Amino acid sequence: MTRPPGTLVRNTTAARINHWITAGCFVLLLLSGLSMFHPMLFFLSDLFGGGQWTRAVHPWIGTVLLVSYLGLIVQFWRDNFWNRDDIAWMKAIDRVLVNQEEGVPEVGRFNAGQKFVFWSMALLVPVLFLTGLIIWEVYFGSATSIEVQRTAVLIHSAAAIVAIIVWITHVYAAIWVEGSVRAMTQGYVTPGWAWRHHRKWLRRLAASGSSGPTPGPER
Amino acid sequence: MADLQAQDYIRISASTLTPPSTRRTEDQVAKLIDTSRCIGCKACQAACMEWNNLRQEVGHFEGSYENPMDLSPSVWTLMRFNEWEDEKGKLEWLIRKDGCMHCEDPGCLKACPAPGAIVQYANGIVDFISEHCIGCEYCVKGCPFDIPRISPVDHKSYKCTLCSDRVDVGLEPACVKACPTGAIMFGAKTDMQDWAGERIADLKSRGFENAGLYDPPGVGGTHVMYVLHHADKPSIYSGLPDHPHISYLVDFWKGVVKPLSLVGIAFAALAGFFHWIVEGPNEVQPEDEAKARELLKAAEKSP
Image 1 (tube, rainbow over the protein chains, first blue to last red):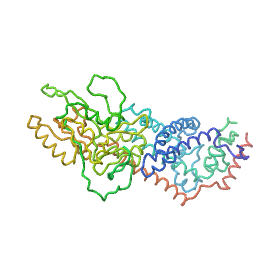
Image 2 (image 1 turned 120 degrees about the vertical axis):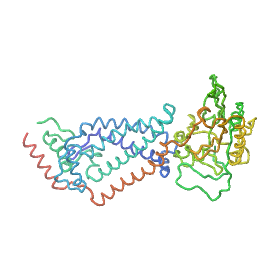
Image 3 (image 1 turned 180 degrees about the vertical axis):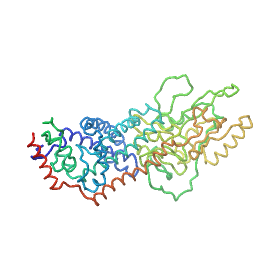
Image 4 (image 1 turned 30 degrees about the vertical axis):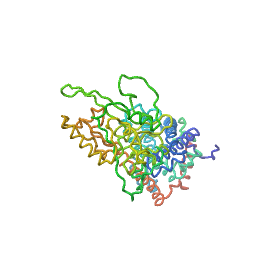
């Protein structure tokens, strides 16, 4: 994709493809999962060709999501380490929430909120996958006792709901902070966006003469 | 069972609505299985296969009278045999006809996510409506008696229907019809309780002081009841649960997590929406771009 001159690469092409495969799987899992969770949402199963198809396809989409999310972990884990900047940033969250970012402690490529989404999903996705395997009747229906399956389905539902709430936070933040959606669709941001939201990242890029997403070797 | 019934529903799986409830003239039915009169002939098992056109694949002899060794999508009732020694070392051969208990408060129905896949008729019979079954196995998790079995062929759940098709037209279930000793009786639940009372009095007079009726209150009573000579310990009858109830895990899942979740999701979505309405988008300002340009220029000049 052609990047306008002077802009910075926020997400590489590989990262964007990986992200959108994950996102697509997540939305399909959310729709099919909710249809089997609450009777008022059972109509969503029609999107998948009915209840039998929903039940059959849901675990396979989940398997794709697991692999896809592992890809995201590989690509993003380095920039998601928790550090002192995050605590300082969290203390100023009230200013961030009202769009008054001047004076808020500077952060690197990701802020504490983004790191929270990343690590929440890094925990929830494997939990959902493992509990999902236990209740995947077609292949593992007789692998565990009924009591284990009852526990698994309870954890699976609760973890899914937490994941959906984290996902809503993630999607809303992307809409709220303008320029973020383009960062994941076309992959670039303006230097002003980086200055406003990820100033430390911008400083590192500037110091190494890199156009992103990772700083080059120090000059 | 296909959905061709003449009975009203009183409970429907995965439904938030009240089923039609004006007509309430139906007698509650029950099947009474008197273990003290059972001779283990398996006529009931054969009759069930015959009436319902079920043919389990022929297996192998496993060293037990029990045959086949478990319920399956095509074995809806099964004679279970247990050799039990009492405290004095006296051997008793306990035979129990296993199958769906048709709970008044059915755990399968509570757990089922497919609308109308599990129903309870006005006469108390719990039935699986196969057209609506999605094969998720939640009914297995809901059931306190380990009864439903999922077919690996059509991915639908099966169990005893209490011959709801026969009962609808005034016939007794096939197993009842075939029983040669009168160990299986069928009728109004109150009549069956009365008859059980007579049987229990008789058993007590013959030295079975713990004889009693198995109609477990933990599931609101059942529409299949047992007369047991040892009602103080049902589990000696090949694992009949002593105090069956819907698992607390299932109760918590369906009673707490399910309703609270939608509230949580709706709250998160509304919080986002109102934040947008109150604070609006976080937009990059011209000053931000200017400051960023300064920074980049300064960096370029100082290599």
